[in-house]
Length: 476
Image (spheres, rainbow, N blue to C red):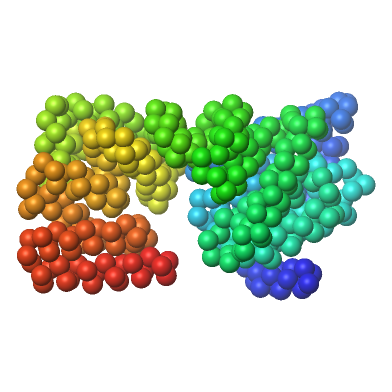
């Protein structure tokens, strides 16, 4: 069955592959490397070790940047990894994962198919193991293609086959753990409670085996220690499915941050867990750490809260004006936000928007936490930061409308929602920039506002828009 899937997929992509051959598939011999470097008399083992060190140094930098969600710079390092050794399986695997995490799924799949056709070795296997190595990585690559296409059950079969071929192969253990975890957390998987429990156990078992593999091997512990952080985060992710406030999950998140103190997902997930446990101060600290990591990637917004406090002073109405009139927001940006062309030269407009969306989302999460803890002023500043960074973000407007309704009359507070809708229309904001569930929330809130203002025509209009947006969010 697996072979049939493999042949079908390769056949489907063969036409695109024929036009994508940009790298040679030849592996340089130690002798040719020595000749080029003028080191013909140097021990081949030394040359081999130097090349491996260079390879893994680039790979490590690329993956650490990926863990910070700095995908643009991660791309560059992982691309260099592939250029350095265009026949090495590992570079293509890690590069495709980076592409997939940044929502470039077509590119991720294309990279995997390049790897399938070009690669013939890795540093994980000896020369005598090349045949089994090829089958092992082919199953991993095809499994990942199915995973990217959200065909998790088929993907899992390929990962299991890779595990059968190499029972303690790190990537296969990791992939099986992730696949079982994804299936048990998928709300549409229709698993019974017993099946779900079994999948959670299987996921943790594979992740734990992968952890043991890294710890037990001098090779892995030297070159792949960052995976300890990722594995601990993933184990915590699965454990939380059964217990939202799990002590074990908290311990794993804490281990993850000890191994790498800039893994954004570890801090973000632990902040959410702390919030569920009612540990407000710890949750705020972790969200703040996420903001610090992300702001360094978009210096235009670095220190935005300090600038906001300088701009509005002690008058909360000045803060609300950022939501009720576009002039105030534009005035703030012109005075405090400088676009550094040099820093962002490697960023496309799409990349910059994605980075800003993520930063705005983190401010929004922390703002919501402040609001739950009745710290209204801190919440307002975080929502204002989110609104300035990503004006398309709907949630901050909903929360600020809720806050403002306590201090402004109905007509004034409703301007927060109506100004946002006007902005979307006048700026021709595209569908892909919006979260339609959030937009649906804006519409239903607006409908309620018009009902309270006895404007039944407008109330009905926005209720219809709410239903359309909600249906769109389900389709997407």
